[in-house]
Image (cartoon, rainbow, N blue to C red; front, side, top):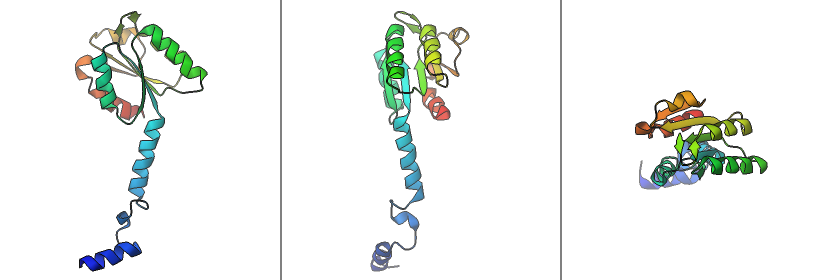
Length: 152
């Protein structure tokens, strides 16, 4: 096939349906998934700024909000609930400056019963203190992305 023939085929939108991204079902599906991601809210409770920055890079494309203390988290959860918002996933550290995240996790479950909670901690005993959907050791924090994709 010559270049002229290829141009004519493209003009007529013949042949490969993927020639036009607007009619490509795979592109539409991918676009829909990306748009759906933006609507999902992931709540990060973490006090160490480099870890927060890491999560933000890891979870590019998702709608993220973060807090660094249990008290801030509870206030933010209430504000989101009062505004009619929904939190889909909570990623939480265990040890925070104002206490353990258990109080914030319990408050999250009360406000949003179907929220998925990922606890990331270097404290291996943390999993037994809080009822969470997934426990990830701090040294495996990269697994957070896989857990988020699994839950959404």
